Image (cartoon, rainbow, N blue to C red):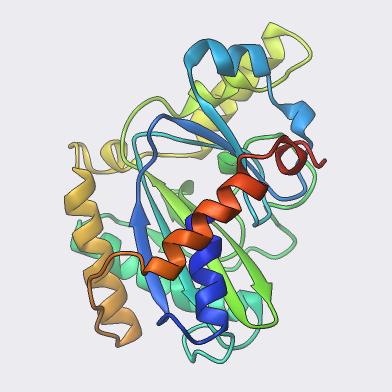
Amino acid sequence: MAVDEAILEQVETGQSLPTLRLYAWQPPCLSLGYAQPAADVDREALAARGWDLVRRPTGGRAILHTDELTYSVIAPPDEPRLRGSILESYQRLARALLSALRYLRVPAQSEEKRGLSNNGAGGPVCFEVPSSWEITVDGKKMIGSAQVRRRGGVLQHGTLPLHGDLARITRVLQFSDPEQRDQAAAHLLERAVTLEAALGRRVSWQETANALVGGFESALNVDFIAGALSPQEEARALELLAKKYDNPAWTNRV
């Protein structure tokens, strides 16, 4: 999260190009949405599994980051591919995500869902209900995304589960009793799907990353230049890690 924000700051000042970043998490990490109560987390269960905890700068509900590919798109607000309303930019990026999944032969779709939002009321798990222009397969959510806008930049990031038990997240969240936890797990498995389950085969992180790059280039008419973090991005990410994302004051702010 610190790296995403560091890139966003550099993009805001014109020192970095618009960026597509692809990454994974080690160790597994539970991320909370910007305004999600920290009380949703079962801290003892999280610690027992050796999983990390972070709060995102974007909205939405809890996500367990493991066995997945995470993407982020960072650009100035006048970038044509992100210009307009949040829903308009969501729709353009959804086309890019769908293009990527077509490389993998996933029968995915995306559509506007009026009256739904992953920032609204409901359970603590992000993947329970698809929001507008999120990616689904046979009605089950495959890619969850969230966006934050600042005066000088836009950040959208999202997660694509590659394989594994999506219901694991319910084991580190608070529920009133075991029966409610089991119901939440069953409900999640009915509403979300991994890439492996959709295709009937396991897909590596690298194969998925290659598809994302190809899909974004094709759908958005852009050519990417592969590269590492700039010294300025790396230094700022370390500052943000110490002052914000690894600071309990940020994690427990709600």
